[in-house]
Amino acid sequence: MPVSRSADPAATLAAVRAVAHWLRDEDAELPDRAAIANAVRLTARTLATMAPGGSVEVRVPPFVAVQCISGPRHTRGTPPNVVETDPRTWLLLATGLLEADQAAERGALRLSGSRAGEVAAWLPLVTLGD
Image (cartoon, rainbow, N blue to C red; front, side, top):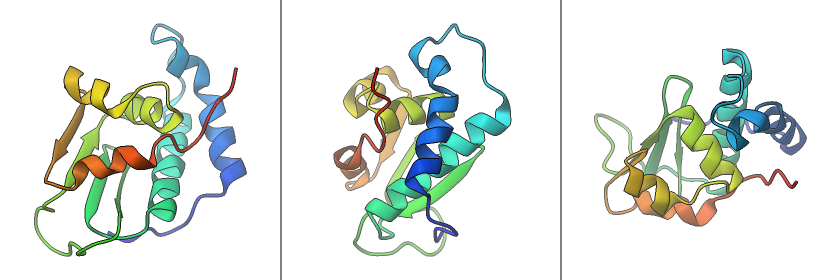
């Protein structure tokens, strides 16, 4: 699935900052769905831009799926290399607030295929600072 648009770094950072309170505190007020969707989509597009290719599919349902990392491109059926997680876990990974191995150990990050783990080398995508 090709990336339809690349993400503007300033817009991506702003989108992530808009949900940062929720990332830092799981019990904080849940941001509205549009804010979460925007942050998820822009960070996923950032990954696809930084690690172009089609050998790994990153899925963050219900908001986005992108292909990334150079290698054989997947075109039909179930991809051989899939990374899948929920929106909050994805944003924690994208900001460096959670490591991929920790998320996988908790069962919040599902990696299938021999190349899926390569996504971790591209994280974090944005840093929030203090």
